[in-house]
Picture (cartoon, rainbow, N blue to C red):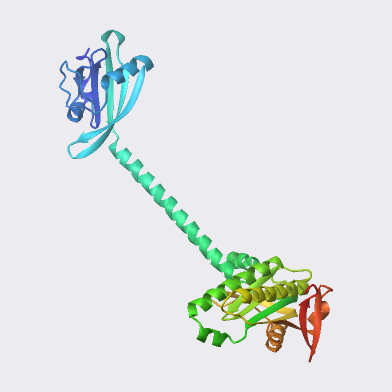
Length: 331
């Protein structure tokens, strides 16, 4: 049987071949490659193929008719992985054919591919996270619709909004407040106040446009229309004032506020090339700043035309020179 096998074929480079007794596990024949890998001596003793239990594999061969397994072992200083296929030879000879192929390089490549895939996944996750951070930052600088336009076209076309309302806020004696208190405490208080203003404004559909030092500007009707924008901005202003009053009662640092509101037209666009800022400017902004500067401490001031737009939910007190002081009708 063995003499009939063409040994030249069995000496194929990189492929180990052996004939193993199914009953005893003894090697009856092995080519040079197999012997080099596993030290098979063609004797009657059972071969130890790496860490493989040959007899257990042969038992599976008897039940399955064919069995394949991978074995990893040390070959010199390197680890080696071999795929071994067990096939039954002639039944009457009780022999099994072991064909062994070195797949170490394949395993290395698979490991490299897995590592590369993990690296790509990790980088993709990082890119996605950075993209979300950039998006969050830009959404803090401009309304979502302006951001969507900027993301799609790389620019925001200036738009005129004919019917909007603006709120302008500042705190009296801000310089003295800075001089008398720790700067970190002032900034922390200001951050808390502006955060509360943002939440109040969102309830009325207002969009905060910018803050600069102690000043705060928000708009109702930009960039998305708000039906009763004057009432929305007035409701926002009244609640700003109510929040500051209650806060001043419970906090050591007091914040004397002035608020001006106005209605009219504005132009909205992204300003800047390297540092993007969405800004609004125009008659409504100018008027809101003007009446704010004329307002008394802890009041909301507006002009005659804006006061005329308000419904019964607000009380308006005439202060002369076109200035009106606004109060909630429920207060």
